[in-house]
View 1 (tube, rainbow, N blue to C red):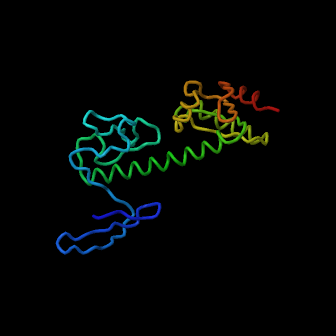
View 2 (cartoon, helix red, strand yellow):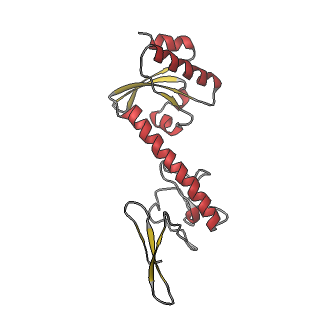
View 3 (tube, one colour):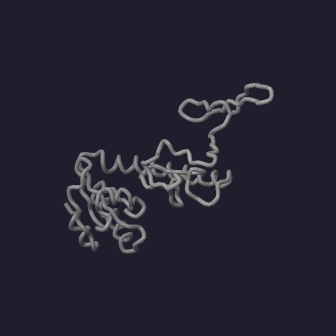
Length: 197
């Protein structure tokens, strides 16, 4: 391979036949690089956690120690480095990165961009909290109020970033991207008293 080409994304690779020196193009949508015996980690070295040999540590979702940075393929610390495992890692990382970006864009537009917003945070793995979230949504709708309902379990990084992970369920008031008030909720009566005009 001579080079990778594309405008904003990989579109083709330029190949050179080592016997004839003939150059040809191959249209592709992505490229997996073979790392060899040493991890090619220069772009994130010292930024993310790595094993002493330099292999990047990532969880099963390919998330590294730094939010928003994913590692896939032969650069990861793992037992087997083969094309099939790299492809699997790449698929998981791509879906994870896409979900992360969409989540961040959505949360930014809902929570951080408005001057002032009040949202209801809950954990979807707690049946009582899930019930309260449904009640908050119904009551807000009946009152004609816009109330973002945010799953603090699914969006745990945002809940952690806002410092509210241990306080769910709660109404969270955010002013200019900073939490200004957190009001814990334990019953439907709390929801009514907090949302009633």
